[in-house]
Amino acid sequence: MDISAEEIKEFWRGYCERRNIPKDVIARGEAEIDKNPEYWADQTMDELQRLVTGGKAR
Image (cartoon, rainbow, N blue to C red; front, top):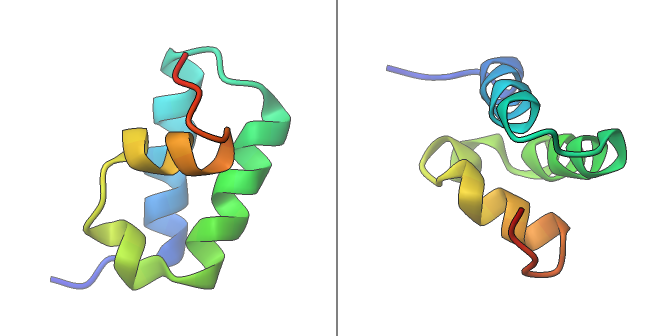
């Protein structure tokens, strides 16, 4: 089953909302998803958060 970039971003937004992640981090994550949605469809949102925050977990 294929998943669209928009579906991945929706999941990312929900992940961020539950963790009170700032809007600028959300935007950076969405930009990464847009670059390679197939990759992010197979990765955890924790991994994306680490990428866009320089390894800082919340």
